[in-house]
Amino acid sequence: MANDKTPEFQVFFNDLSHTDFNALFALLPPQSQRPYFLAGVPGSFYGNLFPKASLNLAYSSCALCWLSDVPPELSDTTSPAYNGGRIHYTGASKEVAQAYACQYKKDITSFLVARSRELAEDGLMALIVPGVPDGFLCSQASTGSEFDLVGSCLMDMAREGRIKEEDVDSFNLPIYYTTPKELEEIIRCNGELKIEKMGTLDGVEAHDTMPDLESRVLYLRAVLERLIRTHFGHQILDELFDRYSLKLAQSSFFLYPRTHKSIMIFTLLTRLRYI
Image 1 (cartoon, rainbow, N blue to C red):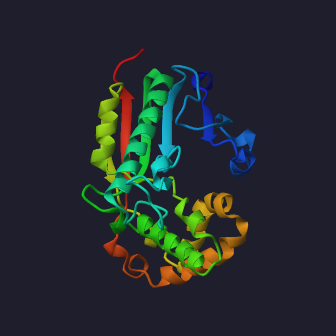
Image 2 (image 1 turned 90 degrees about the horizontal axis):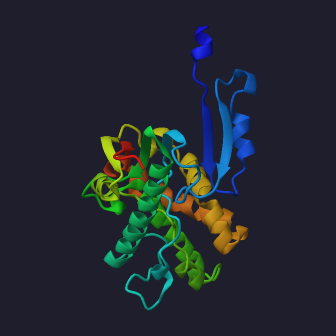
Image 3 (image 1 turned 90 degrees about the vertical axis):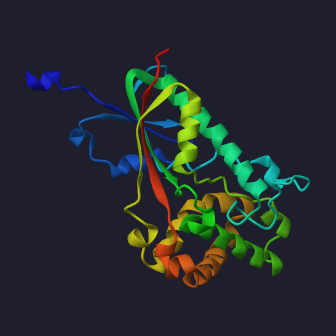
């Protein structure tokens, strides 16, 4: 009789529509060994994905550094935020960093509005968000520095005529790393969610999980390959990451990893009010 009172769990996995959900499902235990039901939900998490008040727990891990789009002013040659010769805000002008920050605030606000609508009255939302410590520059974090290296490799290839320089100038990564203070302010401005707990998880660094050069290169290629292939074509991928490997081997954040700091921001949220 006790088993009759065990609640049934339905788990939804979300990713963009081009994701092969079958690859994910193949990694999970067989259906007969799973104490839950599962389904894939394609679509952007910056919009509504589920019916109102249908989620008891919403969980996002390491996904809320991705922007819904690149700020358009980064490719506008007349804009103060034009980012020619770079692919990220690491080491770029204040205007470029501000354009990224504004896009991030817009996107996270959309995410919070959508999830707060979908949360049940007593629902919880747990977020693990990649970020940098308050007061740190992105160049002081290994991930931002790695993007800067990829950008320098692309510019080298452009100068050598391997790719067009205008293609590099129009390419920017839709990735932003927030700080705890910035994220907290965005959540509080939302007005529908209460921060129950917020802190940083800083026990794991890239050099701990990927201490060798090959692992770091393969990891970053997996992260960026689709974006680069779509913009430049698949032909440049091997050469680009061969060049990146050579530069990474001489970089300060690979040789002296303790000098670069990245964190994970953990946030537990509840509904402030129920509509």
